[in-house]
Length: 433
Image (cartoon, rainbow, N blue to C red; front, side, top):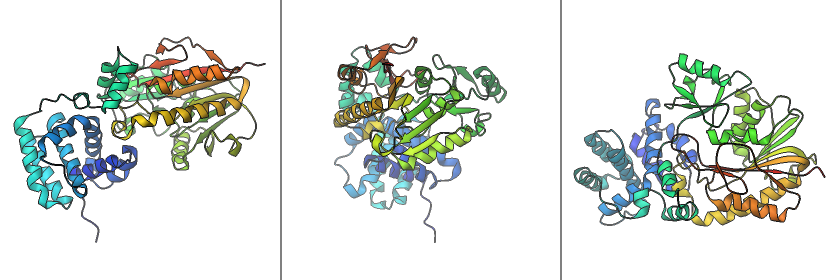
């Protein structure tokens, strides 16, 4: 006999417990979507993302309302109450429905002895309204270390960055220029009743006024368009691509930038896409297949060039390094729960090692674009500054662009609530001689 289907809120609580235990939403949520009815999947996603987005505020309130912490084996009920608090504070759901469904979910999760606690805590929250919170982590809904780090690194902008992180990111598309122009696709969207506008900086980008399921986007299945943030789209212009070049996309999964490279220049000699995770490469291939593009895919540690490199240098290298992802928190709010301050130094060491390894396989006269989706200088311009001091044959290119802030060694984009994510780019060249 099949196990009974859990209620929506019970499944959401289990997903959040998995995040607390170290899984990302992108790992924990996809299998959970099959535990609920088709029509509930978008709501499950909204509950999980919304609760993570406001976790620090909600958790501070819940801890105020609990006389003592729940036992470890009952921790899923803590997550259930966070989901219900999120609905009470940030959704349009009727409060009586939130309370009733939370109590039922408590039974679904095999904790009937805690229904009285759940009911009492949530009735108090409904009756009292939002409490006065003074802890900066709770007020700003970010871990305190991140608040302090942003305050130190961006004394004039830290509050705007935190506010932007707490707003759901817009849905942005990249038009496949091999199939048509941005203007043509804007017309197709209008005919489909979807409102969009050109992005400010990415020449093939369109920002939708309201997010849409991809199956509603005209020609999506046929490769007319892809979903990609505006900041991530900027890499292709920085690479200065031309026919006949051999191009490497290091750390390529899920393949958005690989596809953008192939779309933006015909007759490249070869595009090699590498990712350390063999499990993520099928996603890259799916994107290539949908767009009718071809690349050489390799599962390998890009820094271990002796294991995968064929000895032929590359004309262009895109190095989108593993990073804290502090610039894309609005798209991945679970980063607030998963990332630790102690992660930054080891990540910087990985970034430095990758940059040195990629430099060795760049052709003289070639160009390397270093990219992160981070807003922390330790992962960005400070890495480039140190590399330029150590690598005597490296030259910094100052791109002529209207976006980002000149950091002296690269350009920094901070997250914009109405536009792009937080990103960093630096362009380096190796002299012919």
